[in-house]
Image (cartoon, rainbow, N blue to C red; front, side, top):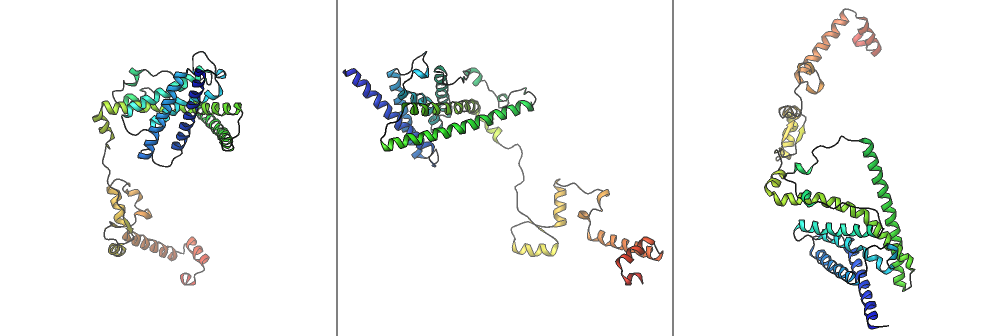
Length: 348
């Protein structure tokens, strides 16, 4: 073996081990429960990004990828390097320090580069149009970010879109399940220090790449919206802050205790001096004054909810007078009612 061949083999081994280490570090970051903005996680993110950037430079120097090639022509050991840009894109969005607009633009470049290379090598037929910079920066108000003439809702189209999303979601879950099973096999092989079939390793990375294609499309769509908002916030800080303020001031919510009468009001008032106390009648009148409930009209003053004690007494007296009149006149219906009750005192 010549010196150049030995050097090339050593370089490839270094590249492969560095990528494997970076991928393992990325998985640890993704599965970590600590907040993303913690100093520990941010340090790990920057460290992992540095490792992946070094891998990218080494891949470029080795000319692993070239134009007019198919994925079948790529060596199994090199298939995993398709993941470099999308891993860098994910990590870039996790960075919490720095200009957000620059981070979004950098991540967008990584995601588009990933999709373009996957399409060039016939891994996927998904294609995302290049975003025009003049369109991305043309928003002069928050209203201009929304399409001015939205088409009417098409229930059929909405149902089809929903069905497609559900189908993609199920496919994604199935694919992730297959990836997890293959990952377990690969990890066990490393622990046992046994050789793996190249086809299994190749299948694992191709599934991992395909799984990230659909995620990448969603990320690009989200970034386009976020980019407009962040750019508008940066170019029009006063208008953005004004829009964030509430248009009206609502009354602060305070707890109240509704009591049945004045006596209970005094009792509860002694135990809860800091809370507003209302009788049922006072509570009702307060709601009417606030416009929350409708004021009673002449037509509904007989409703049980709006009767006062005086109205109850007057209604009872009128009912008693009507009963006495019917009994004096030997009203058949009243006599039948009394016989049904079998009340000898009233029949006497």
